[in-house]
Image 1 (tube, rainbow, N blue to C red):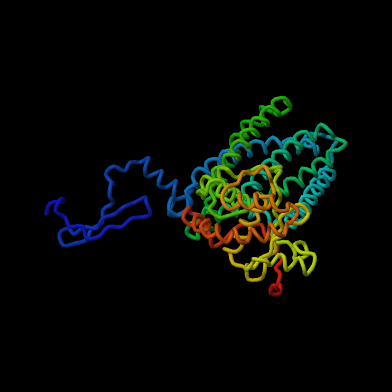
Image 2 (cartoon, rainbow, N blue to C red):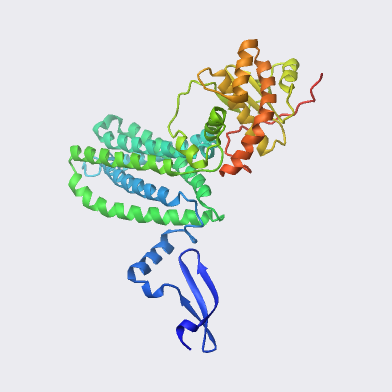
Length: 439
């Protein structure tokens, strides 16, 4: 039988990488890889490289921003490895390596103090900021790398101040411990985002393999670099600032390339203000590109989430005012220059999103510089014309306005591709129960 007349019984594929056909030939079923005749050595090596360093099922098993993020992450890891080599050389010189007068005991004590203060800093930072790292993973990821560069910088300058060397090296140790907590935790949060088949372990393992390969390349370059920079402070600082600049540049574009579909307070604020302006619900790509990755000093009225009941209402009368026109399992009040949200027990994800949406609307109304349109613009106008000091009246009226506009906004979130079954909103753990409102 001629090959062109073979009957194809079945086909199969391995992700998007391989396709095979099963044909009936001379009464037997034989398998044949499609495109095998065009497959050369380079293609075979690339296939092996992908299986070693990329998650199984790539690219379908990871998020669309995976490759771009990993590229910039690789660049920053390589430059950080070279900067770390320069900092390590300076630290060793500072503890007395190459100095006949230096003692092993003194160097050991310095290293123990550095590690000890770093351990303490790691515990304290995880206690104070641990819950914030999931909510603003991109911001804290960039913070960790900036702090890491600063820690390496003071390690390099430490030998120039021998009287304060131990103190300086301990401060650097504390900074690096913060980097370890923030960097590791945000890397885990990004892994959750990238893993689209519940394959977090595989994504994390392959990320470790990529980092190991980059560090090996960094070690090879460092072996060539160290003899050149030894006893040459000017060249050391010049190369350090070069590598640091590359490191920060790559880190900025790494976090900028991440497109998260989960709502945190920053992304929901961007979505809310755009919706109030022209009725559009931005896609995750557009909103993520607008999300700030550096600390901002905003002039708008702040929003505080998950506060205690006593921070929203001060009396039974205020509790009744907070419940007016409010059939939701949350309370909102304007206290001490901030919009405060108190959650009730059993609140749903949709109600969480609604409460923040309403709080952001109130913040926009109270911030005169924010342009508004539609129902919320009318709310600001009616409030200022009535009594601008009646904040509870504003809150009560906002419940009725939000009842009209939020359903369309929430539907728009789903259609735009946002996750609405979970959020990354920065809630505290307070939950309250309150009685029914009285007439």
